[in-house]
Image (cartoon, rainbow, N blue to C red; front, side, top):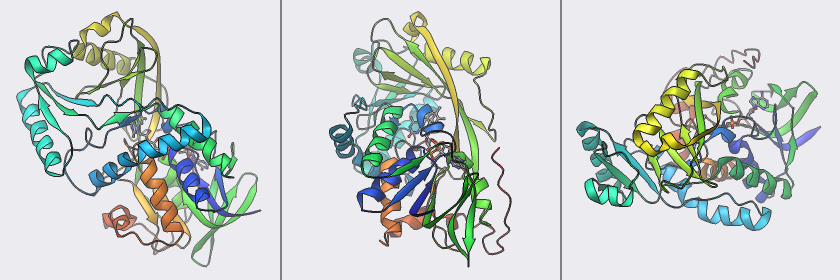
Amino acid sequence: MKHEVIVVGGGIIGCTIAYFLAQAGAEVAVMERDHVGAHASSAAAGMLGAQVEMSFPGPMVDLCLASRRMFPELQHELWEQTGVDVELNRAGMLRLAWDEEEKKRLQERGQWQQRQGECAHWCEGDALWRDEPELSRAVKGALSLPLDVQLHAPRWLKAMELRARQLGVQFYSGMEVQALLMRKGSVSGVETALGSFEANQVVLAAGAWSAALARTAGVKVPIVPVKGESLALQVPVPLFNKTYFSKGCYLVPKAEQQVIVGATEIHHTFTRGVSAEAIQLLLSEAIRLVPALKESTFLRSWSSIRPGSSDRMPFLGPVTEVGNLYLACGHFRNGILLSPITGKWIAEAMMGKKNPVLSSFSLDRLGVDTGADRREVVKYDSN
Ligand code: FAD
Ligand code: GLY
C-alpha cells in the first residue's frame, strides 16, 4: 500500500499538519498507535500563552506569536465546516508575582514584550483587586496579557481531525509504526504490525515517543518525556474569567463553571497516573491563589506526557541527512498554541517552499551529534 504522505502520530500536531497538507491537495494518511488525541493533546489546558510562558525574546516567542495570530481565522473555518465550538475564551491572562523579585522579573518581561509591539501592562493593588476580587491579597501584582487567550484543547483537536477527514485524510487508529523504512539514504515508508506502507514523504509527529522512532532511521532527536498532572474543579459560582498563571500553578476557567488547575512537570518518565502529592500540591497552590476555591468540588484528575526538548523549542522541518523525512515534534508546553504555525510551515516545506525561519528549529541548531552521519539504526522501543 502506498500513500503520498504518511504522518506518524494523531495528536494535535499530526492532525494539523494533515489538515494543511490535504487543503493544499496532498493525499495524506495519519497513523496513530492508540486513538486520535489519546495523549498530551487531550490533556492540555488549552492556553494560547504566546506571552505568558515566554521568559526572553527570540525565535520561540516569534513562532508562538505568529501561531497565536492564526487562531481566530482557523477557529472560524473549523466552526463553519465542522460545527465544533472550541470555546475560545478571550478574557486574557494574568501572570502573577508572589514576591518583589518575581515582580521585577515580570515587569522586565512586560517591557521587552511591549518593545516588540505586544500588549502587556503591569497591574497591582486596588486596581488589580477591583477587577479580580477573588484573587489573593498576598500577590504583589500581575502582568496583564489580554491577547493570550485559551480554548478547549480536546475540542480543538476534534475539530481539526474532523476537518482533515472532510478533506480526505485517511486515519488509521491502533496502527503502531515500528520503524521508518529506508532506501538509499531516504525514508521510503513505515513498517507497522500490519505490514509495510510506502510513502513519498513521512512526517514524524509522535510527540514524546518521536525519539524512539527517529532512531530506527539512525537519527537522534533529543526529545525527553515530561509528565504533567492536572485536575478540574467545579465552582458553585463563577469566580474569575481570566486565566491566572503563577509560579505554583495555573487556573484556567472553562465552560460550565469548571476550572482546570495545572500542572506538574516531572522529567524523564513515561509513567502514567496522578500522585496524591501532585493533587495536594496543585490544590494548595490553587487555594492560595484564589481562597474561595476551597468551596469548590473536586471533579477529576489526569496526566499525560509532554514532548520536551533541551532548549524548550520544537524540532520542525526536514532532516538534513535523511531524505523525505520531516520532523514536527518537541512542542513541550506549547503544542496547542503552536499547532497552526507548525501545520502551515511543515506543509509548505513539504511542498517545496523555502522558509529561512525554519533553520532556528532544525535538528542542526543544537550542534550535537544526531548520529545521522553514521546511521546507527536502533530497534524501536515503544516504552
Ligand atoms: P501527542 O498529543 O502526545 O500526540 C502524539 C501521538 O503520537 C500520540 O497520540 C501517540 O499515541 C502517537 N504515537 C506515538 N508513537 C507512535 C507510533 N510508534 N506509531 C503511531 N503513533 C504513535 N500546550 C499548550 O499549547 N497549551 C496548554 O495549555 C498546554 N497545557 C498542557 C497541560 C498538560 C498537563 C500537558 C501534559 C501538556 C500541555 N500542553 C499545552 C502541551 C501540549 O499538550 C503538547 O505540546 C502537545 O499536545 C504535543 O502534541 P503532539 O501531537 O506532538 O503529541
Ligand atoms: N503549557 C502548560 C503546560 O504544559 O502545563
